[in-house]
Amino acid sequence: MAKTNAEYQQAYRERHLKDFDSDNTRLDVVISGPASRALHRMAAQTGVTQRTMLEAVLTQAEAVILAGLDNAAQELYYSQKIKPNITRLSKPNQPKAQDGKTPRTTNS
Image (cartoon, rainbow, N blue to C red):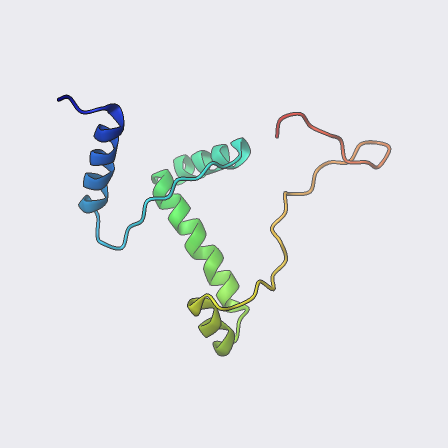
């Protein structure tokens, strides 16, 4: 019996994860168009893959968070018992219209 597309995909993913060191994890996520384009541009600009760029950005962001924590808070962070106490990430400042209101956009 022939394999279905889903079976071929599953076998590929399993092989692909085994090709790397055992610390790798598959990440399926949908991100916004602007974030996707930014990742693509950043990777292209620096001559690395999008995977490498994403890993670098996440590692650097974590280093910034850790720099703001004392040793006890870092231990809680690594144990994942820390309660969120950081400012939420927000979109960059949007330009204001002449009336002082932020213009609405249909597609970000």
